[in-house]
Image (tube, rainbow, N blue to C red; front, side, top):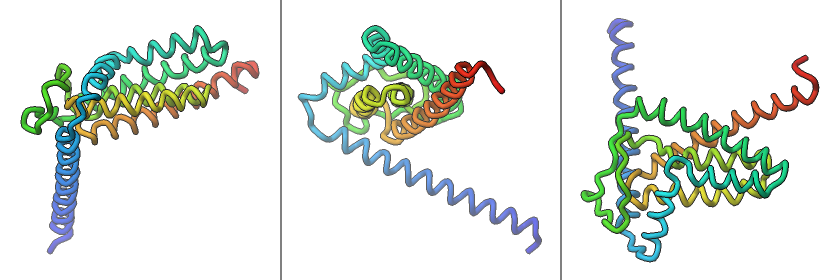
Length: 207
């Protein structure tokens, strides 16, 4: 076998392994999605549907930022700015970046047995990653950098928002996990950059 043929064979085997891994991950995702769909939780259906809808366009984060700015003093205002900056960057990365290149279709709720009473309008964008989860986690992490106590509370809210997207049938669990990872990473980078900029400003500019 020539060197060129060997490289081609190795590339083909690597592609097959990646394809097999992605298929296995998708199959696991579907099983988890069906498990959530098949679990009867009538007392949670309406609250989670309302929470999922309330998180559209980062409205929960905007409301929380307003509360922090109004009642949290200087620290609250810094936390609000940090959180919203993280949301802005994360939303751009998710909606103008990953979602445009992702070809993962939204779950078929009827096929997997999601109850109609859980439903919220199915978005028209691709499923991967969850923009709601990304933005909610980004806001919580951005706030945490300035106000750890408030950040912990907001992480609970972010977790509920992420779960609500699976519960209402508009995302697979993997979409939510990927969105959370994106939000965490982006917020960490954004918050550190903002802190360095603020430190330089307080010291009289770059040296």
